[in-house]
Image (tube, rainbow, N blue to C red; front, side, top):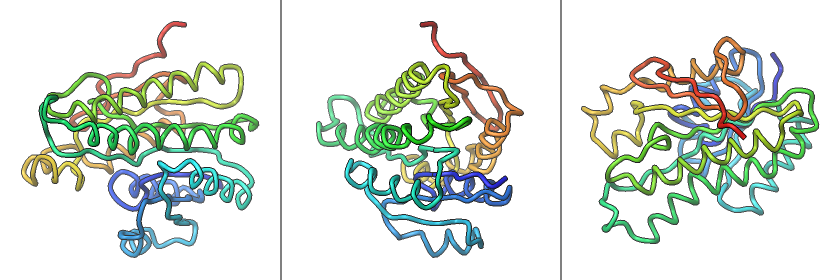
Length: 242
């Protein structure tokens, strides 16, 4: 399809599956990761020159501005931005959570998405059609015990999407939030163990639903959100009333 797609957290899990699907469709994917740790395996898995990787700390305003500026200069446009990078620290009750740990969750999950949107919107809003997909979580739609920092940050991602959608109403830019339930990823294994992770939905399935949203076969209104749980779509919610 020859679209320019930017994906954060693109070298493993859901981000890598999304990159695979879009490249197969004929798109060019600019992937951003915090480190180069998984680059070799990711490139081998994708096997395409249309998978371009950049390394950078997306909690740094200076770095985000630099990265997105380079992508816009090189590609001329950003058709789709997918804020997928995320972080979840150790399970803990609220009284055991340190301020440092809460700050880390907010930075990695919410600040990063905010900065990516902030510096992508000026270019995207000028286009006839553009889409921002912010990956939140079911935990962002209702609090999960012992995951307060993650739930709070992902709830903020939902609010970010709703604000962007309202602020860009009447333009070609849409913004949607995707809220997956548990997925069989490395993060899930680290939190709950391999046995639990194996019972969760696959990143491939969630990526497939996102591909359908992008292609319009699953309809989610700008400012709305979709919940994907246990290998099926369990809810599509409109944006809140003004």
